[in-house]
Length: 115
Image (cartoon, rainbow, N blue to C red; front, side, top):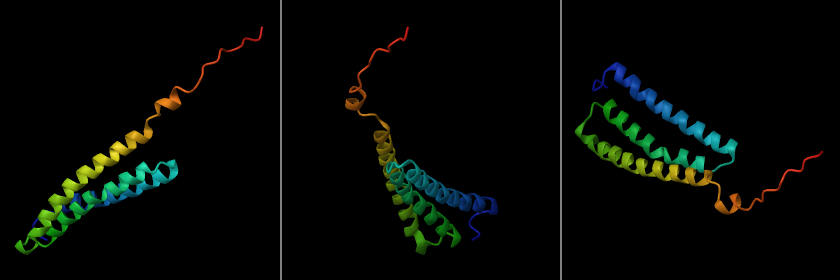
């Protein structure tokens, strides 16, 4: 536990708590908006959360060589998380676009004046 200073621990732990809160808020937004793409974003955030928890665990036990596999797992989860977040962003972007067939199917009608 001595591997990090108290201020650094505060930052690490508060970042994990903040990430959990963000996942929950994004999931709730997906429920309220009815857009399941936002649920995908909240699920895509999980690998990054696992990565952060790996880092905290490794530091908590004073960075022992026996837990070196956590560093590899953290790096892997960061890589996977970056790709899942990218994919979720693409899904949200696609779900927010108006299909061209729908946009072009409306006919404009002249406004009648009542004089």
